[in-house]
Length: 264
Image 1 (tube, one colour):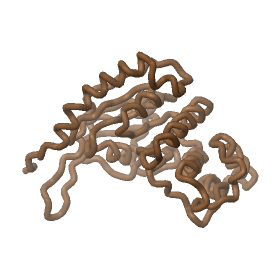
Image 2 (spheres, one colour):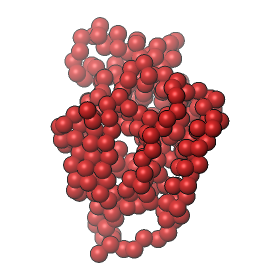
Image 3 (cartoon, rainbow, N blue to C red):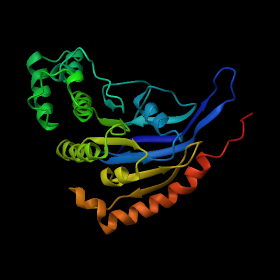
């Protein structure tokens, strides 16, 4: 059974004193349960807007969104969000940041502690439980952000270019860590990126978006065996998918740099 469905989603922004902008146009997307789905597209195509709609942080101009058959009408703990910026509470330790969500749900203290301890082990932060965010590297902070999102046991994990600010080596390690956590916990993931290698390495399916107004140009099932590691990046299968997606993205990137007509 499909878990997340977007039907004919349109988003039109009308800033005061400025021409209206059609950000998303008639987007339909289905994300099945327990799959790792990735959206890739040129800058400004509406990828992050689409994710914020699913998170309930924005409202579409038209269309319908459902999670488990229920309309999405606002933020909820059943959707965990990880942003590119770390968005951690600087006055809380690693353990306290991870416990924050379960405590809001008024779970027993012992259960909150057990959840935090389990996730600290899962994201390889043992020994840093009592550290504050300012004492951690960028990769470690993002591991805390991932653990904090998972602490509420969300139905779907939404990730908006979470590794975009990391150096290439740390980024690869974080991708491998994320896959380890995902494979052990089998969460449904909707992941946004502009990086084609990252999209193929992580995804069960990759949805390529057009330049603005964003639409789904093509969806590809990524038939590369799991678990995936560093050698996956140079396999013939990987390179074939990369060639296909590069071709799809090329024309859209050119379109993204072409001025758009003003909407009436």
